[in-house]
Length: 233
Image (cartoon, rainbow, N blue to C red):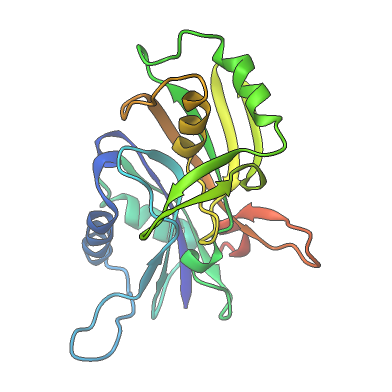
Protein backbone atom coordinates (compact mmCIF):
# COMPACT_ATOMS: atom_id res chain seq x y z
CA UNK A 1 0.00 0.00 0.00
CA UNK A 2 1.19 3.51 -0.82
CA UNK A 3 0.86 6.24 1.81
CA UNK A 4 1.46 9.98 1.45
CA UNK A 5 2.69 11.75 4.58
CA UNK A 6 2.33 15.53 4.92
CA UNK A 7 4.58 17.22 7.45
CA UNK A 8 5.66 20.64 8.69
CA UNK A 9 9.26 21.73 9.23
CA UNK A 10 10.11 24.71 11.44
CA UNK A 11 12.32 25.96 14.27
CA UNK A 12 15.88 24.66 14.36
CA UNK A 13 14.91 21.79 12.03
CA UNK A 14 14.72 24.27 9.15
CA UNK A 15 18.53 24.21 9.13
CA UNK A 16 18.61 20.45 8.45
CA UNK A 17 19.40 19.63 4.82
CA UNK A 18 17.42 17.25 2.63
CA UNK A 19 19.71 14.22 3.01
CA UNK A 20 19.60 14.52 6.79
CA UNK A 21 15.80 14.83 6.66
CA UNK A 22 15.72 11.54 4.74
CA UNK A 23 17.91 9.85 7.34
CA UNK A 24 15.81 11.35 10.13
CA UNK A 25 12.59 9.88 8.72
CA UNK A 26 14.17 6.48 8.12
CA UNK A 27 14.98 6.29 11.82
CA UNK A 28 11.66 7.82 12.92
CA UNK A 29 9.68 5.28 10.88
CA UNK A 30 11.57 2.44 12.55
CA UNK A 31 11.01 3.95 16.01
CA UNK A 32 7.29 4.36 15.27
CA UNK A 33 7.01 0.70 14.30
CA UNK A 34 5.64 1.43 10.82
CA UNK A 35 5.46 -1.74 8.70
CA UNK A 36 7.36 -0.14 5.84
CA UNK A 37 8.38 -2.02 2.70
CA UNK A 38 12.04 -2.38 1.72
CA UNK A 39 13.66 -2.63 -1.68
CA UNK A 40 15.17 -5.91 -2.81
CA UNK A 41 18.81 -6.65 -3.59
CA UNK A 42 22.09 -6.66 -1.66
CA UNK A 43 21.44 -3.33 0.11
CA UNK A 44 17.73 -3.08 0.98
CA UNK A 45 16.44 0.39 1.84
CA UNK A 46 13.09 1.79 2.88
CA UNK A 47 10.88 2.62 -0.09
CA UNK A 48 10.22 6.36 0.23
CA UNK A 49 10.05 9.34 -2.08
CA UNK A 50 10.07 13.03 -1.12
CA UNK A 51 8.46 15.88 -3.00
CA UNK A 52 10.49 18.99 -3.94
CA UNK A 53 13.35 19.29 -1.40
CA UNK A 54 13.17 22.37 0.81
CA UNK A 55 16.13 24.73 0.90
CA UNK A 56 18.13 24.98 4.11
CA UNK A 57 16.79 27.72 6.39
CA UNK A 58 13.26 27.65 4.96
CA UNK A 59 10.19 26.71 6.96
CA UNK A 60 7.28 24.75 5.53
CA UNK A 61 3.72 23.79 6.37
CA UNK A 62 3.35 21.57 3.32
CA UNK A 63 6.15 19.00 2.86
CA UNK A 64 5.37 15.53 1.51
CA UNK A 65 6.87 12.07 1.37
CA UNK A 66 5.50 8.78 0.03
CA UNK A 67 6.19 5.40 1.57
CA UNK A 68 5.07 1.86 0.82
CA UNK A 69 3.86 -0.32 3.67
CA UNK A 70 2.77 -3.93 4.09
CA UNK A 71 0.08 -3.04 6.62
CA UNK A 72 -1.44 0.02 8.31
CA UNK A 73 -4.21 0.90 10.75
CA UNK A 74 -5.89 4.28 10.17
CA UNK A 75 -4.87 7.77 9.09
CA UNK A 76 -5.43 9.09 12.61
CA UNK A 77 -3.49 6.31 14.34
CA UNK A 78 -0.58 6.49 11.88
CA UNK A 79 -0.36 10.27 12.31
CA UNK A 80 -0.36 9.97 16.10
CA UNK A 81 2.20 7.15 16.09
CA UNK A 82 4.61 9.17 13.96
CA UNK A 83 4.10 12.37 15.96
CA UNK A 84 5.06 10.54 19.15
CA UNK A 85 8.59 10.07 17.78
CA UNK A 86 8.96 13.50 16.15
CA UNK A 87 11.36 16.12 17.54
CA UNK A 88 10.42 19.80 18.03
CA UNK A 89 10.28 21.43 14.61
CA UNK A 90 8.86 18.36 12.86
CA UNK A 91 5.13 17.63 12.86
CA UNK A 92 3.10 15.09 10.89
CA UNK A 93 -0.02 16.82 9.58
CA UNK A 94 -1.78 13.99 7.75
CA UNK A 95 -1.43 10.49 6.34
CA UNK A 96 -3.46 9.51 3.26
CA UNK A 97 -3.63 6.40 1.09
CA UNK A 98 -2.83 6.60 -2.62
CA UNK A 99 -4.24 4.62 -5.51
CA UNK A 100 -1.85 2.12 -7.05
CA UNK A 101 -1.13 4.15 -10.20
CA UNK A 102 -0.69 7.55 -8.50
CA UNK A 103 2.60 9.21 -9.42
CA UNK A 104 5.08 9.51 -6.58
CA UNK A 105 5.47 12.77 -4.66
CA UNK A 106 8.55 13.96 -6.54
CA UNK A 107 7.02 13.39 -9.98
CA UNK A 108 3.71 14.98 -8.92
CA UNK A 109 4.96 18.45 -7.96
CA UNK A 110 3.63 21.23 -10.20
CA UNK A 111 3.45 24.38 -8.04
CA UNK A 112 4.14 25.80 -4.59
CA UNK A 113 2.75 28.59 -2.46
CA UNK A 114 5.07 30.76 -0.34
CA UNK A 115 4.95 33.54 2.23
CA UNK A 116 7.95 35.86 2.01
CA UNK A 117 8.95 38.66 4.39
CA UNK A 118 12.00 40.86 4.76
CA UNK A 119 13.70 40.29 8.10
CA UNK A 120 14.10 43.23 10.45
CA UNK A 121 16.98 45.40 9.32
CA UNK A 122 16.98 44.09 5.75
CA UNK A 123 13.88 45.80 4.35
CA UNK A 124 14.67 48.10 1.38
CA UNK A 125 14.56 51.79 2.25
CA UNK A 126 12.49 52.74 -0.83
CA UNK A 127 8.74 52.07 -1.37
CA UNK A 128 9.33 48.46 -2.35
CA UNK A 129 5.70 47.38 -1.93
CA UNK A 130 4.36 49.56 -4.75
CA UNK A 131 7.47 49.03 -6.85
CA UNK A 132 7.17 45.24 -6.57
CA UNK A 133 3.54 45.43 -7.72
CA UNK A 134 4.66 47.42 -10.77
CA UNK A 135 7.48 44.91 -11.36
CA UNK A 136 5.02 42.00 -11.37
CA UNK A 137 2.66 43.71 -13.83
CA UNK A 138 5.30 43.70 -16.55
CA UNK A 139 4.67 41.45 -19.55
CA UNK A 140 8.08 39.82 -19.09
CA UNK A 141 10.66 39.47 -16.30
CA UNK A 142 13.88 38.31 -17.97
CA UNK A 143 16.81 37.10 -15.84
CA UNK A 144 20.13 35.40 -16.53
CA UNK A 145 20.13 31.86 -15.13
CA UNK A 146 23.41 30.07 -14.59
CA UNK A 147 23.62 26.61 -16.17
CA UNK A 148 26.44 24.08 -15.93
CA UNK A 149 28.09 25.45 -19.08
CA UNK A 150 26.88 29.02 -19.53
CA UNK A 151 24.28 31.64 -18.70
CA UNK A 152 20.79 31.39 -20.15
CA UNK A 153 18.18 34.15 -20.33
CA UNK A 154 14.80 33.01 -19.02
CA UNK A 155 11.50 34.80 -18.44
CA UNK A 156 10.20 34.45 -14.88
CA UNK A 157 6.76 35.94 -15.60
CA UNK A 158 4.99 32.80 -16.98
CA UNK A 159 6.17 30.84 -13.94
CA UNK A 160 4.74 33.32 -11.39
CA UNK A 161 1.09 32.32 -11.22
CA UNK A 162 0.21 35.00 -8.68
CA UNK A 163 1.90 37.63 -6.53
CA UNK A 164 0.10 39.61 -3.85
CA UNK A 165 1.32 41.75 -0.95
CA UNK A 166 -0.54 42.12 2.34
CA UNK A 167 0.93 43.91 5.37
CA UNK A 168 4.40 43.69 3.80
CA UNK A 169 4.07 39.92 3.42
CA UNK A 170 4.50 38.68 -0.15
CA UNK A 171 2.16 35.86 -1.16
CA UNK A 172 3.60 33.88 -4.05
CA UNK A 173 2.17 31.02 -6.10
CA UNK A 174 4.81 29.75 -8.53
CA UNK A 175 5.82 26.94 -10.85
CA UNK A 176 7.66 24.28 -8.83
CA UNK A 177 7.83 21.56 -11.48
CA UNK A 178 11.14 20.03 -12.55
CA UNK A 179 11.09 22.11 -15.74
CA UNK A 180 10.25 25.42 -14.02
CA UNK A 181 11.12 25.31 -10.32
CA UNK A 182 11.01 29.03 -9.50
CA UNK A 183 12.38 30.02 -6.10
CA UNK A 184 11.19 33.16 -4.24
CA UNK A 185 14.77 34.44 -3.99
CA UNK A 186 15.06 34.48 -7.79
CA UNK A 187 12.16 36.93 -8.01
CA UNK A 188 13.37 39.23 -5.23
CA UNK A 189 16.93 39.07 -6.57
CA UNK A 190 15.76 40.30 -9.97
CA UNK A 191 13.54 42.98 -8.43
CA UNK A 192 16.21 44.47 -6.15
CA UNK A 193 18.89 44.30 -8.85
CA UNK A 194 16.84 46.73 -10.93
CA UNK A 195 17.02 49.18 -8.04
CA UNK A 196 20.77 48.79 -7.62
CA UNK A 197 20.45 46.64 -4.50
CA UNK A 198 21.83 43.21 -3.67
CA UNK A 199 19.65 40.69 -1.84
CA UNK A 200 21.68 39.56 1.17
CA UNK A 201 21.69 35.90 2.19
CA UNK A 202 19.80 36.45 5.45
CA UNK A 203 17.39 39.10 4.14
CA UNK A 204 14.30 36.92 3.68
CA UNK A 205 12.08 34.81 5.88
CA UNK A 206 10.47 32.23 3.58
CA UNK A 207 7.69 29.82 4.48
CA UNK A 208 6.41 27.24 2.01
CA UNK A 209 2.68 27.06 2.73
CA UNK A 210 1.96 24.03 0.56
CA UNK A 211 3.03 22.01 -2.47
CA UNK A 212 0.62 21.30 -5.32
CA UNK A 213 -0.03 18.89 -8.16
CA UNK A 214 -1.97 19.59 -11.36
CA UNK A 215 -5.09 17.45 -11.90
CA UNK A 216 -6.40 19.56 -14.77
CA UNK A 217 -7.27 18.21 -18.21
CA UNK A 218 -7.25 19.51 -21.79
CA UNK A 219 -4.51 22.01 -21.05
CA UNK A 220 -6.49 23.69 -18.25
CA UNK A 221 -4.47 23.49 -15.00
CA UNK A 222 -6.20 22.70 -11.72
CA UNK A 223 -3.82 22.83 -8.77
CA UNK A 224 -4.57 20.93 -5.56
CA UNK A 225 -2.34 20.10 -2.55
CA UNK A 226 -0.47 16.83 -2.92
CA UNK A 227 -2.50 15.15 -0.18
CA UNK A 228 -5.78 15.94 -1.98
CA UNK A 229 -5.19 13.05 -4.40
CA UNK A 230 -5.11 10.58 -1.51
CA UNK A 231 -7.88 9.44 0.81
CA UNK A 232 -8.30 9.26 4.56
CA UNK A 233 -8.51 5.64 5.71
